Amino acid sequence: MPNENVDDGKLSEGEWKERFNQGGWTSVLPDELLKDPSIGKFSKGGVDQVVKSYLELQKGYGDKVPKPKATYKKDEWDNWNKSYNEGYPESPDNYDLTVPDMPEEHPFDLENDEKMYRELAYKYGLTTSQAQGLWKEVKGRQLEAYKTQLTSLENMKKTDKEKLSKEWGSATDEKLKLARSVLTKFGTENVLNMAKDTHVGADVWIMLANIGEEFKEGTLEVESSSTSVRTPTDTKMKIAELTASKAYMDQKHSMHGETVRQVTDLFRELNKHQETARG
View 1 (cartoon, rainbow, N blue to C red):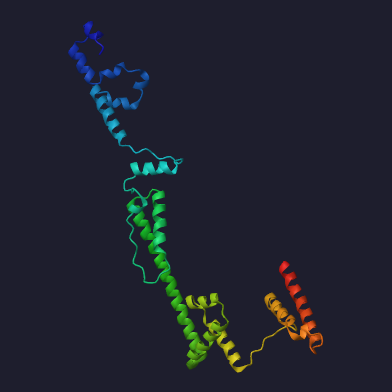
View 2 (cartoon, rainbow, N blue to C red; view 1 turned 135 degrees about the horizontal axis):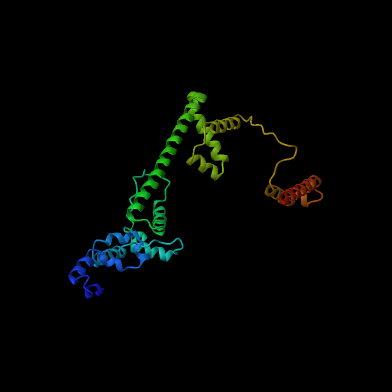
């Protein structure tokens, strides 16, 4: 504390202390500090105000959460979340996720969905309440979309049923039975599964029933070229069949010449298949 004024009699010690505690101490600060507006709040008090303000500042700074950096790596984010992100669980398994009520039959793989979601929520630092809220929102929307799809499918089936009844009348059941027989006999496994699991459409059932009627009446006509349509496998099987026949093996056989001609034509056909495959 300066006491030169006390010594030369200008101010007594008591007067100096009084002035000092009323902000007089600021007069000894450098000009660059006195220019700062924040110094004004100490102009009517003693140094105890400065000390008190400093302590409060330190206390507040001690509780201040450091701002995470965009360059943080995974382990740095994990440490920051565990230290400062209130509600962040110790591990992905600690998220409390509740699955919305689902119908008995649904297309969702809930076990794997939940496992993946937990890992992503933990990776991106979601708190337990945030993770639960987002999970319910996502699953809720998926469920609503699925219900909308089911409703749409039921409406299409209803429309098809009405169209088939209008087309076939009292013969609807028999026509559908015939159409399913054609589908079972000629459909591949993928087609059969598609007909079982998805909407086929009234026009398809009508087409299949018409094909069945043609087969029943023996009037089915297939437009074809002058040469039979065979796959490469069919051609190879026919060659093997003819070359193993007695007519091909026995030169004296009455059909030997015709059989040799057929085999020659089949080899030409097989060669065309191979050229087509080569592009």
